[in-house]
Each structure stands twice: as C-alpha cells, then as structure tokens.
Image (cartoon, rainbow, N blue to C red; front, side):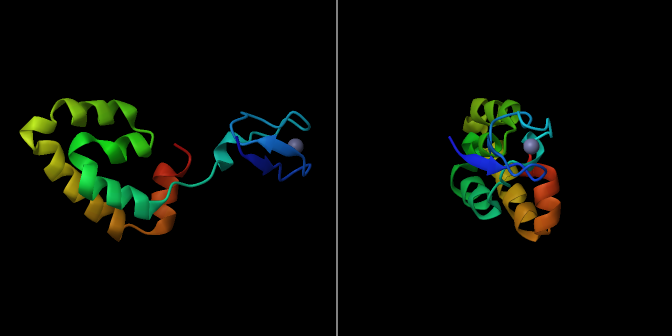
Length: 100
Ligand SMILES: [Zn+2]
C-alpha cells in the first residue's frame, strides 16, 4: 500500500483512500498517472487479450477483447490504440486514463 501527501494538510494518506481523514479533501483523483509507455507495450504484445484495457482500468473492454481474441480483431484494434497512445500528448493521456 502506498501513501500520498494530502496537498491541503500535508498528512500522509493511503493512495487508495477516497478522501483525507484529516481535512476531507478528495484524494482519489490524484492517484498516480498510468504509464503511457507500459500501456503501449501491453497493447502491442498482449493487446489481443485486452491487457492494456485491464491496465488502464477499462475492465469491461478488457473482457470483451479477451473473449474475442480468437478473431484477431482485438489485436488489430490494440495496434491502432497503441499508435493512438503514442501520438497523443501526455496531458491528453493523463486526462483520459490517469485517474482510471
Ligand atoms: Zn488533508
């Protein structure tokens, strides 16, 4: 379990906590951003099984990809998504997936 510092009262709070027990500030939105590099690698090598979707918190999509992996359609979609992750700005990526 990792700890983060509450930006308001500087108290150590579990990164899984919804809000700070000290001052009530919502913590969950500042959970660590996902690694874009890892998402791209997962999409390239395990994308046909939905690995990048699970990683980015899109579990429902992950299961769909996994169910249809034998059609190779998820693998094609994952390749396109890997390219999209690579070309989008870090800020866009974090906005979209950072607080998943
Ligand atoms: Zn606090």
